[in-house]
Figure 1 (cartoon, rainbow, N blue to C red):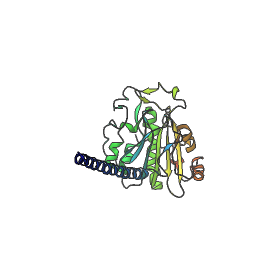
Figure 2 (cartoon, rainbow, N blue to C red):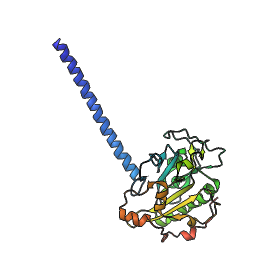
Figure 3 (cartoon, rainbow, N blue to C red):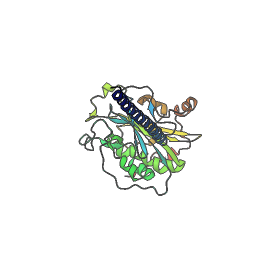
Figure 4 (tube, rainbow, N blue to C red):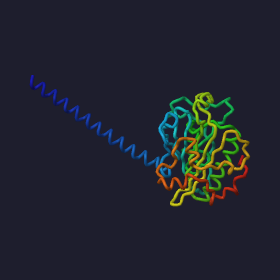
Length: 288
């Protein structure tokens, strides 16, 4: 009897040791994954990955990493709250054929390419097809057609004013500064209940969109824009200039969370167009 108990105890001890080794392996693997994931995210974000100022159901989001860009995805709004990407000067920038729109399996709700049909809204790219393709390649271009990178935009905004801003960024600002950090996303009404029925299927419709441009470095420059849904499309781009503080106030997000408080106050609290050459390009017509 004692021998049987001894053998049983031995088997139990071996199981415990195997479980311990397995748990240790999983902990190490998880830690390595987290470290690598953080490193990859940081490589796409200057001064930290965008986060919330205060955690609420409307500001909570999951970070989805794609080739060339990050998405802060909200399963409540069924929208990206922000999209972040970096652009750099490239020789002979070009994009391949437009891929097809695709559902993103990482989104909680089934948002399909057909979800916007008949709504009067375009599937508005936040990480732009052309710029991402030219800088980050064809795999990244395919990722821009995931539905998690889309938000409902009125055609006059998406095809005209928003597109003009994207063209100015890629054709003028990137060559001018060699590198840019871009953070962009939707803005919703201040009261959720005011917009609760304004949806395309499950997708909440924003009232405006923002785009923040940052020239990284020891002496950074920033420009920020807020463009409402209802525009004619031919307005000058500089009509929509705002401070980053205003964008943060309307979104509840913190866009450069690692920036020192004094630097953040100086950079984010004012509108300064010096050095951008914005006036020369603010009225350029769109490419299409």
